[in-house]
Image 1 (cartoon, rainbow, N blue to C red):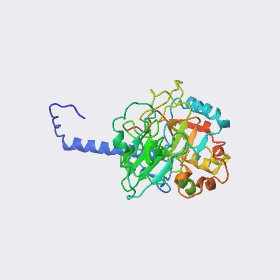
Image 2 (image 1 turned 60 degrees about the horizontal axis):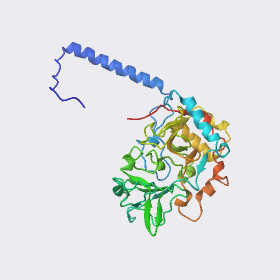
Image 3 (image 1 turned 90 degrees about the vertical axis):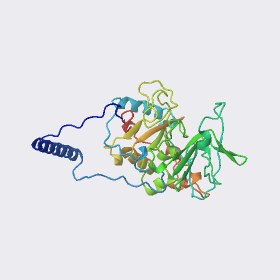
Length: 353
């Protein structure tokens, strides 16, 4: 925005020859810039469209979850920050990160336009002593399916997406008591297909405000053979809440270590790493491929480093589809051998407009 004041006067018209010289110089500069861009692009490659996401996915290509980060620069402290994360992986559950499909996962539902709407009550489980401003609006008129079940575990994550109204709701510690839905926290995103992929105003189910459903590994992803979006990563020791990296809107981090990853920090797996040389579970291989192209986003803190996944109980049917998809491998062994040391940290606030 320009400062108010006297309107700027138009410049005096230059002689025709001088204008022509300037125009030719401008065209030459554009040509040089175009040549530089072509030199930076691998031979034979033009602008590349992102592959479509398998099945139902609420976020569009303009969201933080659908950005190709293979050519992004690195944080100056990348190596030390990765080492800080690796220490967290190695200190828990035999050094294998969690792949949560049975608990501490995300229960996700896609609803039709005719799904009846209900108001979700605010449960003051954090002893705020009042109903925060805006909560009633965020929690009202939610098309929760009659058979919805929050994810198992203390977090009780519940996600509802209505493609017809282009709205998404996420709730934390959701439960149904005597027929009444209630939640400790959560929020709504309108125009979700064109949204940046996070909640504003302090709302949302994750501590960072990032939409967990944008980065969860879905059953549809695995069945299609590819995860075509960034991955939501939970870590044990995020940096203190005073350090937040966009696109996170806030944080519940506590670590004062200078190398701790802030919530919202982007990481990627080294794009040059030869995945064929690794002995990975097929699902972990898909995670690795997605991590090379779209990367991880630190969304929350947890009891162990964990890759977020969709809970099987929200997909309908009597059988948990992950039993078939994982082909007998326990979920806690899926990420065995994942090359965490080959991660790279992108600059703080990478991609911020």
